[in-house]
Length: 129
View 1 (tube, helix red, strand yellow):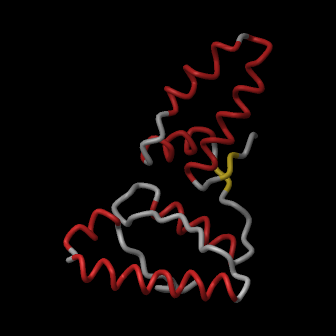
View 2 (cartoon, helix red, strand yellow; view 1 turned 90 degrees about the vertical axis):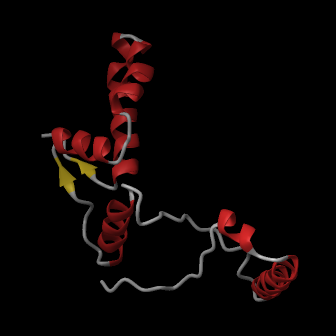
View 3 (cartoon, helix red, strand yellow; view 1 turned 180 degrees about the vertical axis):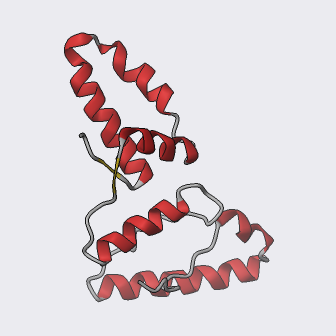
């Protein structure tokens, strides 16, 4: 898969350097695009942006590449899943502390919820061997 630059994204905090005239001009452009999307039945554009400096950046690209290539989600061991989550600053221990006090009868459900969150966060798929 070739990574393409298909969107133009501006960080709101970067817009503080614009003059009032530039802000007005940008607002006019955004309004025109909004009306065009509305008139053509596209609806508002909703996106998730992951900055290249974030630990989620490459795992996100990996998940997109697997999806568009019709490849199955990468399957890994629990140890590697936890390692990937820690590298991505997903505080697995905090989530364990939230889920496991539910009691012994809820442990399986808590574990499933924890694994699901970790999979979503890391972009990887856990293989329960």
